[in-house]
Image (tube, rainbow, N blue to C red; front, side, top):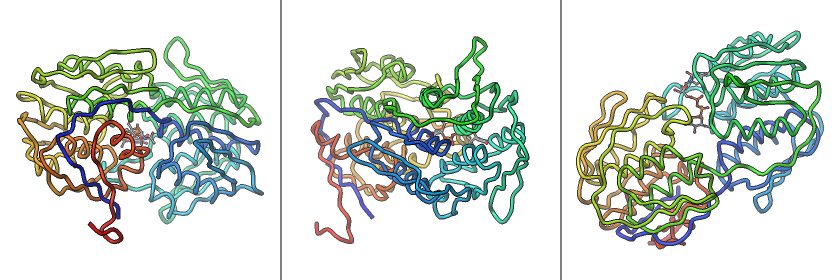
Length: 423
Ligand code: UD1
C-alpha cells in the first residue's frame, strides 16, 4: 500500500489548479442510469471514487470510457437492477444508484452500505423518500429491496437535509412524470450541478421561492454533455494548506463563493486573501494565527469535509480554539494522529478543543479517512523533519494527484510503496 514521505518546513508558492468536484461527479455519473442515450462528462477528476463509480456502472450494464478527464457512458445491452456488495462496500455513495434504478425498473436490490469510518451513516431518509414516491422498501439478507407497482410524484419533507438523499430522490423523481416537491433539502453546490444535468436531460429541476426543490419529471430522459463544477473541498483544502505553511499560493479555477464561509474564517484568523472571480490568492503573513470557534453545518455553513484540514490550521494558531463537528458522530480520527506530531487536542463527543503549538514535528502517522488524510498531509508540510503517512489510498479517493499539485508549488512529497520500492 502506498505511503507518503513529506519533508516539512517548505512554504508553498505558486499556482494550484483545481479539479472537477468529486461529490458532484459521483451522482452525475450515476444519473446516466436514467437514460440509454450517450452521456458525456468533462472535467472528471482521476480519483479512486470515480473509478469505483465507473466499475459500478459497468457492473450494471453500461459501457464507460475515461480519457483526458472526459467520461463517455453508453448503453451496452440490457441494464441490471442489482448491485454486488463488493462494490458498495468500497464506496458508500454507490447507494445513490437506488433512485435511478428504482425509477427505471420499479424494482432494485442494493446492498445496505453499513457503517463507515465516520459513523453509522444510515439511509433512512433515502428510504422514507422512496416510500413517499410509491415504493415498498424491505431488507433481505443485507440488501435493500425496493419495489413499486407504480411510482408517483409526491411532496416530501426530509427530516435532515442529507446530501445523498436529496440527490437520490431528485434523480428518481426526474423519471416520474409530474411534479415532486422536496422540502428541507441539502443546498450544496453539488446539488445544483445534479439539477443542471437533470434539466439538460429533459426534466425540470429548480429551487422555488420557498427554498424547496421542485422536480418536474418526464417519462423518458435524454443523453447529456456537461462540465463538472470545481471541487470546493479540494480548493478549500489547498487554501488551508497554503495558509498553514504561510505560503503564497493562487488557488485557481475554483468558485470562491462556494468557499465563502471558509474565506471568512481564514480572514478572521489573520490570513490575507485576494479573492478573484475564479481564484483565491492566499498571501504570506507573519502575524500569529488567531484561534477561532467553528461548528460544521450543512451548506452554506462550514463544510464538515473541511473540518479536518481546518483542525491542522488551528493546531498552529496562538491560543485555544474549538471545533464542533455537528454532521458526523465520529469525525475526529485525525486528532490522535496530529497529537503524535506534537499537537495539543482533546476531543469529547462532538467537540475538539485545540491548544495551539509553536511547531509540529514529523512522525509516522496513519490516514484513517479521506479528509483526515489530507489534514495529516498539511501537518506534514508544516512539521519539522519527515512525516510518513500510511494508507494514502484514503487520500486518493478524493484528491487528484495530490503530490503532483503540492510538489509543483514547492512541497516535497514522495509516494512510495514499501512492498515494492527501495528507500
Ligand atoms: C455527502 C458527501 C460527503 C459529505 C457529506 C456531508 C458525497 C459523495 N459525499 O455525504 O463528502 O461529508 O455529504 O456534507 O457527496 N443521515 C441519516 N440518514 C440518511 C442519510 C444521512 O441519518 O438517510 C445522516 C448521516 O449519518 C450524517 C448526516 O446525515 O450524519 C449527513 O449525511 P449526508 O448529508 O447524507 O452525507 P452523504 O450524502 O453521505
